[in-house]
Length: 237
Image (cartoon, rainbow, N blue to C red; front, side, top):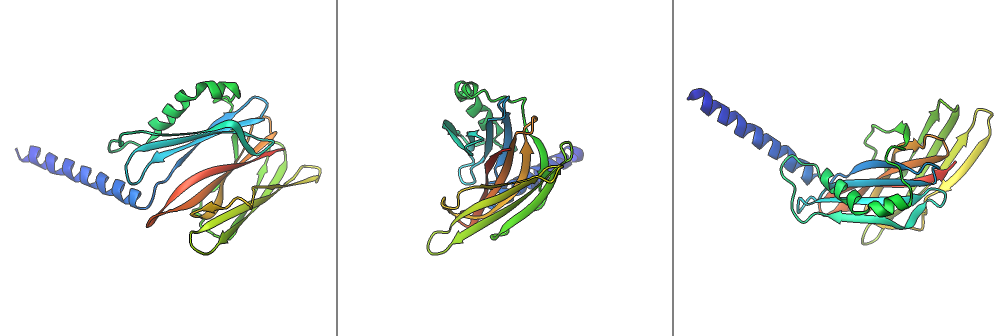
């Protein structure tokens, strides 16, 4: 009897601990998960998604994007969003919303010949929690092709009333022969409400090394907290 009661107390304590961790995580804001959904075989199209759980309603949500790499812009019908009408159960992460948005848009995905098996190769992954309003500078190498890259992210914060911000990136590549290419990506004229910081979290390249994707993490104000969201900037190499 004592053992049974002790087990009940331990189980209750575990549930309470999980609940506290879950609650504290949500109080800090809604943190999205980024998902690489692959390139087309020619590297001209890139597809990605993000998903999470809404902080207030606990409803899982997802967003899916299809990008024309050369234009560094979405294809005409390449933006989708989904939010489930019921909250998640304790312990769920909202990934079911990602599966739902993919299954709901298979015709468009097939139209642009995005290939889930043709995912990007990571050349740079930031493990730091960077929250610098001024920007960020990174450099990395593609050792297989002997190419050196660097990227200088410059962000601009606009004051007065609602916080708005924008950014652009100067991206350079230098090949094994010392030949340099410079790209300016991102549009500083696009002012995003509530976004306080931008940072480059990943740089991935398609297997053929013809397209580069920079994954940008954004801190977005949300009431007393802040949400984490993602976007990308694309370069045709």
